[in-house]
Image (cartoon, rainbow, N blue to C red; front, top):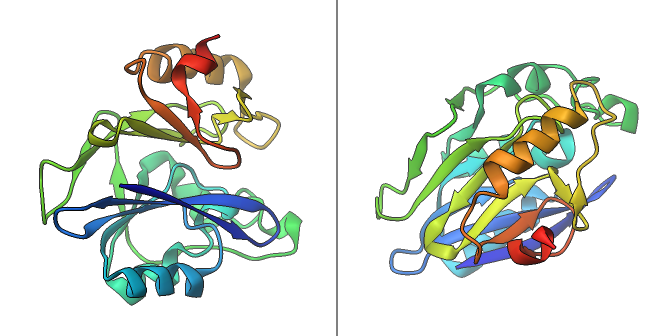
Amino acid sequence: MVARVIVRDVFETNAYFAIDEATGSGFLVDPGAEAERLYSIVRDKGWCIERILLTHGHFDHTAAAEPLSRAWNAPIAMHRRGAPFLADANLNLSAPCGRYVTIGTPVDWLDDGDEVRLAANPAYSIRVLHAPGHTPDSVTYHLPSENCAFVGDSIIDGNVGLTKFPGGDQPTLIRSLETRILTLPADTTLLSGHSAPLPLREFLT
């Protein structure tokens, strides 16, 4: 199952739980704020979060990752090109928004094509698709068993994501959409960082 939780700080961001119902274990994607609330949801549901996955390094997708990682002993994972964003509050946009967000705990660095599997059920796995453009480290996480893909900010409100921030590049993002996202199975639901779920078929039209 996949559950969307809208978390709020400077912006509203979609955090997603991807939970294997057979084991109650799973992943948390993009915990951008409200760490205590996300922790309470997991406690109340009796879930086990094995890993925290970040689609990119902007603070509105990462700010709750470190405290939750410590609370659950769950590693944080993201594309290796995200390292500068975790260390620089200006690059990750937190400082311009009146926040100061950095992540100092060790991170599991991911590469294009990696498979992230649950220890509790290795058949429940997410494939990493490097999709730069919004940021150089942006990825899409494809979860075939749930017919969905977590696209971060590569797509917002059914349109191409923003590229006006440091490291953004529109031609690169369009190429990523064409080669990494639009090539997913047609029944895939695209789960964006800031808008409602979108069937891939609708995005194609």
